[in-house]
Image 1 (cartoon, rainbow, N blue to C red):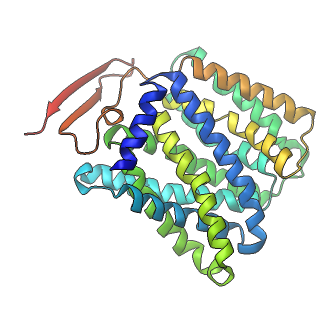
Image 2: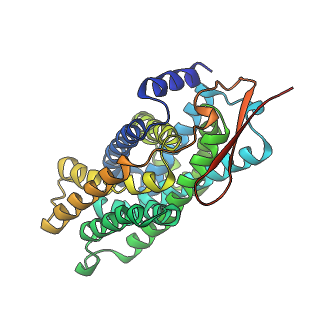
Image 3: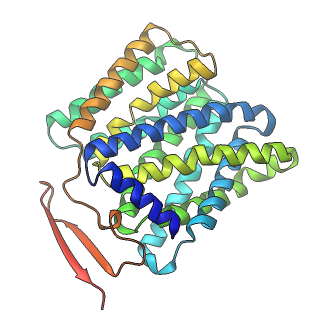
Length: 328
């Protein structure tokens, strides 16, 4: 309960339902993700790619379950099922992406994975100007990836594409759960599920290589990724449209390139630098007009609040009807 209230106080200070606040949260989230991934690469030789992803997810699930202690009354059957599905998708993002990073450069893997958010941005955009930013971001991602070079590992690319599909699903599910479930209780269900899935899939191959030192490193990485960024992304998606959020994620390959340069000493070429400039421009354009027109109830109400707000989207033109009802 205290953790939920702390998150709510922090996000209230950032501003309610504004594109600027959502953009700031998304940017901090992306920095945490790329730093976490860069440091995770150093674990791959010791526990394997899937083992490094499993260690982070397992710790994240334990941390959120113990700290948040989700209440059954906060969920309906549908929202609980959505949280479980989000957990499965989250495990897919982490494990598949770690498998990609083990085979191709971090910046390239992030650029390919961005196809997921880009697909969401294009599918949910309305009007020619809103499609402009995803198109600009896609051009930048192509320059970052440079698929014509022929030096990219095919298996690594396939893993990154699978992670992209999971990431697109993650965006839609996270916004849905963020709108329907108060605080971060949805994450307190999805992350333990992700930890269980990762344990079943990747845990057995890493158990024999664990040491107390690796367990502590995994705990620290879990806070950096995924606990902090996933909490921030849920709050950001309460303020931004899925189209704007998906386009804003174009900044992540750029952050990946910079982190890859500073931490992993992966030097980008001129085309990658130009691509970085394009995705930054697309991210700025998306952030300027990305505020949602409706304010989800779960942003402002504590988990035990008796006030629920049901948001109904009336048609495809963006008109919103909102019904406020009190439980008897």
